[in-house]
Image 1 (tube, rainbow, N blue to C red):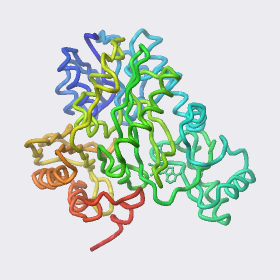
Image 2: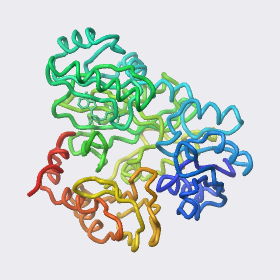
Image 3: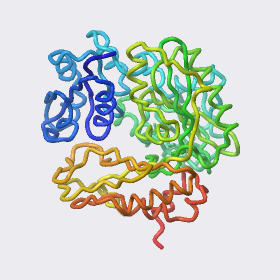
Image 4: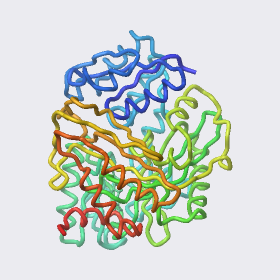
Length: 447
Ligand code: ADP
């Protein structure tokens, strides 16, 4: 096992990786920008290196500075967390070229899945069902029209290099297509430097259901069941559950068997998540994330495993040492993403947290880098805490989340805590009766 790991990230996820390392007796190196000198991930790490000014492109995305930090501290491996460099195939390549282990999949698979068109083609060849759409990149507006006529409106134009919901535009009719085509390509070019787009049928009432997988380097691939991430605003997840209130064990197992077989054929390694839309009893693949996800704790709570420790073990070449039949699911887990934003307008609200109090008690987990007196910097993602609960049943988990939300104090900045409380109190949410479009309407609604 590694003796020292550099964590190329910040905030709650840097802390999350640090905790797994500590429990395994691995020393940690934190990297940080000048804006994060007093951040919790820096305070708790065994060593830390300042890698640049506040702007992420000069610090957390500064590959040369990160590799130098690994080199001078004698780290053997680098964990990228999520976001930043986690899905950058060139970074993974450079990490390995410099003699460090990248804690994640091979650069080849990161590259393949980072191109959503290539990812869909790979899944098609493995017989994983897809959302109906164009066969690869759309070469012209004319081709877009032809595909839309064939699959019928509404359609969605999506960026091949997409992420974070950017470069995605719906066209409800032929009249709207030209505009959607133009805007999606312009957005994709601006956000990703790549204006390649493709088309999918726009599903009117799907759920977002994703499958957590893990593979060692000896050919063993397992899945840890699904997460339901349908509660989204602007294609960004706010609340996640494991398992999905909509899925039966048989449906989960059938999908899991097909996916693990496919990934084993591909020779995939480390953690990954396959995202699907689920409508009318059918799964349709949309993309694969080749990293740890923000919402991984709900899976950990129902499976009783530590996914980061598993990532470290397989990256060090260890065998999983268990098979699919050893993985069992117990109870229900829910995660609320608490962000430093106005709960109604979603305007960012960075600044000093005067008082921070985390809830506790049976079945409550808080993943957060907050502390009283900490100033949330304005330069990064607004996620400040993940409140996760586990209960014997979904109803118990909801009751526990309501109780935990009511105990939590983040004073001095605005947060989405009140919005989460409102969601947990809603009868439709409690009934598990929602699709990916539900939250937008809920947020817009003023009772
Ligand atoms: P990104 O990588 O930008 O997050 P995804 O392909 O993962 O993009 O899609 C993000 C979200 O957008 C999905 O979770 C879903 O809510 C919505 N979405 C994506 N594809 C479709 C589709 N074909 N029909 C309806 N909604 C979709």
